[in-house]
Image (cartoon, rainbow, N blue to C red; front, top):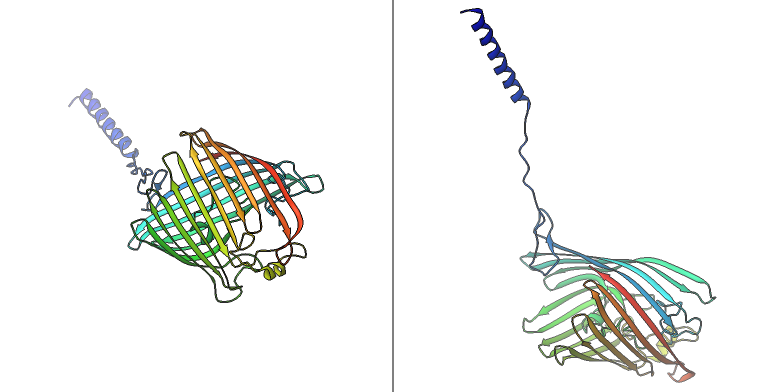
Length: 380
């Protein structure tokens, strides 16, 4: 072997060893399998599977700006309406509210049916002119709805069944102007039977709300209702028992689908109005409702209205209400979708009522007023 062959062999060996060592130093890790968010179309649009689970989640909400003006919707005590249906002589200038709401709807299937949780929370800031004529603000937040459902069982803090079992009221913004129809929100436990042919029935127990109407014994308030839905519309009724005062109130509602554009509805309520209790629960000058569910004035009340859908973007909403104490309310508004997800809603309202004493007799003149309302809402 000559020198030249020896040198070439040594160089080749060194290159081979160096290449082997360089190859050993570079380690390429295997990529982890990507886990993409999957669309869940079982419960409608907007749901997706929470990664790693079979639970479907939908996140939604809105950003809303309201402007109210006038005797009815421009008052400084918008959320604390007086005995005369919110009509105030103190102030008739602007009321303004900005609200941001978030909702979380989670659903999944179990051996007992659909397991659902629904949460709604909002944050808002109100601006208004107070009774002294100065600008004022109010900021707050609220857990609006917190609902757990499994099959027909519901455990929740939400609107009273006395409202929801008859589908609240109309489609106007100010649906409680003049005559109220709901006791508000409460803790409740309920069970709903779905007959599968348009018939359903619900029975539940509720806690009530407020110093006079929250249950003060082991006996809860009881609410029961039923509804029947078909192509022509719907009929629904509800009966509620206030266990604190032993009072009963009831409502019956009928909805008619006249055609594809026009829908009409009418609702009636009845209670055995107790003037003595209403006076004792009120103040020296105003009456209070005699039970948690007796939210209108006198023995009876009636509400009615409708919606006319001009096209995919615009609709007209109307509602009228009147009760046994001659309280009256009316609201007319337009809902216009400027673009998908952004609606503009102007509305005009009117309300009137009388001051009454312990016997229900009129002791003051009629108070009435007009108001205007404008809403901008971005929903998602």
